[in-house]
Amino acid sequence: MMNRFIVRAAVLAVVGGITGCSSLFGPEGYFRDRGDDYLNADVIDPMALPPGVSEQRVQQLYMIPTIQNSEVDFSGEFEVPRPQSLSDNAFADKVKIQKLADRRWILVSAPPAQVWPQVRGFLSRNSLEVVYTDATSGVIETGWLRFKGDDDTKDKYRLQIEQGVQPDSTEIHVLHMSVDKDIPGSGQVNWPTQSVNQERETWMMDELAATIASDTGSGQAASLLAQTIGLSDKVSLDSRDGEPLLQLSLAYNRAWATVSHAVQEEGFTLWESDDAVGVFYVNFDPTFEKNEDEPGFFSGMFGGDDVQQSSPYSLSEVLAHLQLENTAENRKIFNSISSTAAEPLKDVPGYLVVVRGQGEDVQVRIRDGYARKLPVRDAKKLLNVIRHNLI
Image 1 (cartoon, rainbow, N blue to C red):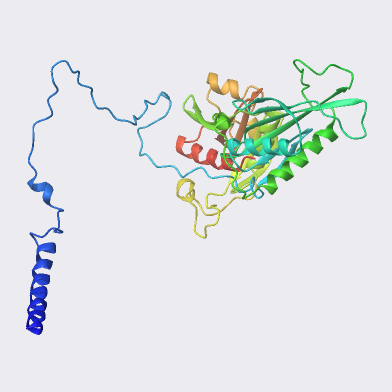
Image 2: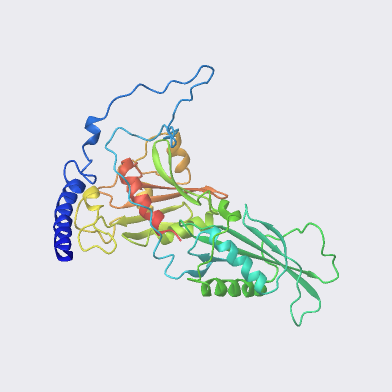
């Protein structure tokens, strides 16, 4: 009797399993394909609001802003630009100390918001009192301190943390002040334009750079307070009178130095330069593209496989035979250049990189060998290469 019950239960289980699979996965099953159910959906009336309740219009969360720059030509076919990468030349090391004339600063390949807590940590670990901070402008000032072996003076430091030339980079400028130990140390400090003691500035800069370099890969958190540092770029691609240009928020001597470096890197060849008139005479290899065996994306733009190694003309000859339109813009840009020859030179190769500006407002343009404007697309591509090479 028991064996018969077991056999009957097993048969029922098998039959139930077969029908169960059908009911679970078949066209009428619980786990059926519902990909086409929307075709049978009913259309219902819109929701009606009760009287006295105002209707709020649904709008896009992310609106496309209106473009204010009327000088940009949108008539041609749009090409999505390549992402702006960091300069490999500038960031061979995470931290380095750069120098221009008598100025030195620390360059860090990290955003200011990440560098800010590293600087604060350095000061704290070395028991350097901080008496003033402004995370918005990136300023940190220490209290008065005494160097061992110097009983006559007291010293103070001001650290300026700011956006670097390249994206996601930071510059740290150190300013040192030293006064007689008997001078009262409270109240507003009138900081000098340059450090009083270069040796003590160097000490602080070397120690700080070494500490930040040793923190590489330590997972330092970014500071929310310092997020506003670097919101305005030091270098941007702009347009003026329909011509693309690089806008540099740098002192002119530094702008000249970094552009000089840029036109000798990654595809550019510097033939000659004249800092008195602010012009570089350069050539560009249209087949150049870093880490690629085939011709670069510039080759289709500028054409030609042969790279001219030198120009048959000197820069002074080129400048004396410029073919400029008589416009207010050209008169302003080339007012320091006397172009006296009426007849143009034949087949002037290369490009003229023109640097103009004063204070910390410098513009960089690129023209052909006759100083005529390039097509907008060509000028933008060449200026972007220069921008990538800046340090």
